Length: 490
Image (cartoon, rainbow, N blue to C red; front, side, top):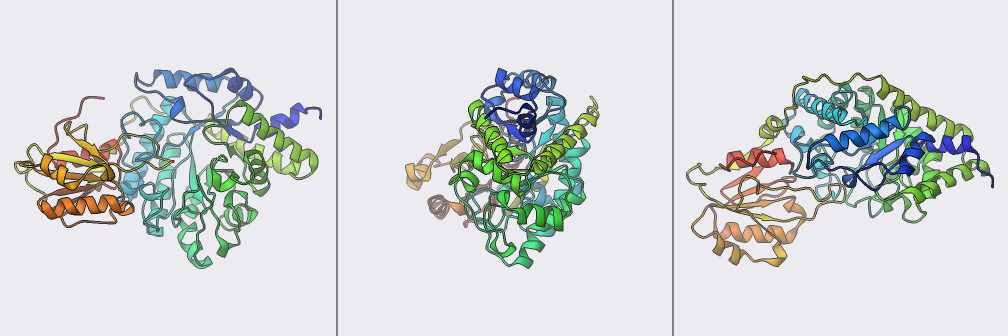
């Protein structure tokens, strides 16, 4: 079949694509010139070890390849960070901000984050996460949520959107219609949210309503199903979810972005090209392809979309509508003024300090001199990736272990004669970790336990310290309480 350049360009206008390296390959630059809506940066595109100059140069090259392309990333602050991948984030994360419950601080933190992203040359942030985390064992949201109360999350959803967009970064509230009540990871499965319709409307949808009212330029979908709302497949592929709930009930008129289409929750049975067609049919405007979908994959998706238009499966008017919505956001980003050179830094560390909670009696500085700090490792979620966490920058002799590879007896022997600090992350999700820590605390009731994930579980110990996140600033705020030495200058 003969290619139609105008149809190809229209399909390109709905694609947000990844690429391989820290420099822009020719296929990306040519694709942007041919109408690709934009790019999504991941860890493999960002190396800030020598400072921001390389990333700024990359983004300048991308911006010059087309008229205001969308240059995006997943930068939530807290545990999910791309610009903080080397040492952890300078922003405390949503759970910490929710624990403080100061929407003004949330807006200020996100304004600072947005200004940093603008300074690096980004234009679209796939954030904030406005899911209401009501499932304690949720494997994909957790500390990415502001909390488990819909009213609280709604307050901070609006504040985060306003903060990011005040700095000229388009915000994408996610994961619509709400991923917080799931116990499966949509990277691997299709989670089901099994709750009555009235509960879903008042709980899951409330923060999205607040984000829409705050003027969010975009909403990003979830690969979840909600039977009570007649969403019987992935919401990303559901006209009921996107046209009915999001545009109809919530009145959203902006750009709808799919979550990554390479995730099994949406494309595991049908493949990415077919998922792309169905997402456009359902009402998505911009298709995020995922991390590992490069030139050949992008071509296959474009071909599937154009074939669907020619076959009549995808109305040309729907594709034109999607392309226009992405163009509107591109025009919005082009109108935003550059952040002022003297913009104040975000109060990231201040926020992290305000979030820390202590239950029990914290030992004095003298009692905590030269502690034995042991971290019980926990697997990073797929969305989080391998980002440093813990207290080792402030306690250089920290030992990291896995509960299944060590024993409480050996740890107690190594800690003999020294204060004991055990550090965990989402211990409620790992029975081996809980058993290990309980054994330590039985033998050492003077132990301090630090929880750097959700503080769902607490052992019997002298003091339980809760940071509500594992970002670098969360770690520093805890280390300051425990008398840790200053970390090396970054």
